[in-house]
Amino acid sequence: MDNEELISLLDTLVGKTIAKWEFVDKPRWRGDDISAGVGIHLHFTDDTEFTVYETQQAGYIDYEFVQD
Image (cartoon, rainbow, N blue to C red; front, side, top):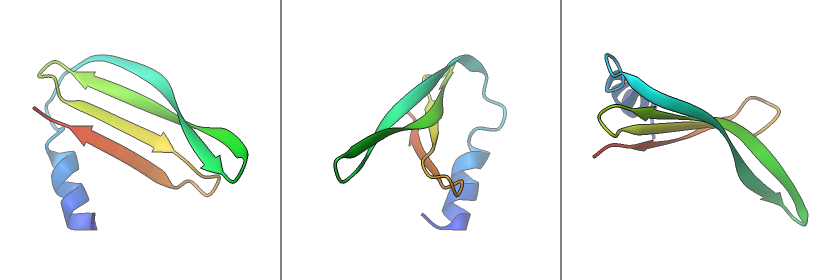
């Protein structure tokens, strides 16, 4: 996803109301070493979901966007 697509995606979140949020862990495998990526999962009142994970010490962000 390029920057324009990301900006468009994030713009769809403007004005939405968060119904609930939760911290989540996402397993990350590096060979035999298993570690967790820390993230946050947002649930909006219109059933849209947005999850963001920090997956590397360098601050790399991974995200997942679900909209009905």
